[in-house]
Length: 487
Image (cartoon, rainbow, N blue to C red):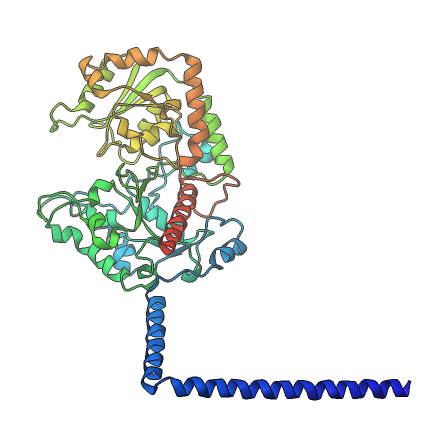
């Protein structure tokens, strides 16, 4: 055994000596080859070779620096992990200087040239508690009703956003960025009288100057930002600097070109805009409130075929509202509420009574193609009859079915005018009672999607208009931001 071990050691020693000898020989040959090459390449060629390599490194460095930044890949994974209820992402709410939002409320007496707007912007945008509804609304849900202004959505959305479950304080974890600028309240006081285009644009330019200083805005050029506009989109689309032209030019300002916007009426050819329901008077506090109201309007005993709530516009030539009012007053199957003699602003008991008492409600154009009254009508379970296709086509696609005929009736306004309104009765009487019941049931099921709940209240599994809007906005913004960084 000893002899065998010694033999192995001797063998290992010889192998080690042989390997060392091979390594030394290889090192000598490499050194010799290097000196041979070196002696054959002139010094100037070596210098140029080094310069070429250095320039290539510089070019590569600048190419890397000029590439667009990429968001952290783990960001979306963090979002899902933080709150399972926020699968669409998180919202960062900018803390704008007060001059762009809360100062408008503090100076509410100045918002309208004719009357105070203080009640309209009170109570988080819901306005004062509704009164006089005792004979119209079940007593135990009357506290859920307020006289809410049709243009109060900016205040409502800001108030809801501040306590939203998917609001986040760290901008680096945000999917979308909300700009709480009350552009509608701002422009409201400048739409009439002798104000200039500069007056109408001043606050809009100021808020954009503030935004361009925010790294969160500039890093993606605003593609992950959104704003709520409380008025119709047309109030922010002035094309020129002519003082006599309507509205501000907010939506045509360069820094707004990527910002997504919400409004109560959208431009149908603008992919960066989406319409949301007008605020109504009903702000449920629980799922029970919703179910109780749904049952109430489902079983209400309606005595009229249709109704019309509105007023003639005497200064408008061939005013269509005048055609409807004259016809409704002359037709025993129609219930008319003339807002020239009845207070109709922000919802009134007479309005809700009329809609509850009728199977259908006539809805001409409002200040734009849409009208707040349409949502008051649907809230009462009355089926809207509209006369311009743009009133529903392309509007409220996140909240209402695209097949408007499942819960509305369309009659062309020219045909109505040609018959002095009598076509309306002919069409509505031709709809079978079972079909009317089916259409009303569709409206009743849609109801939660177009009302704004009381903040801080639990609707259980129900999503209201605000919840649906923010969920869809975040999905849209995430997609847009991903596309931006991939391009």
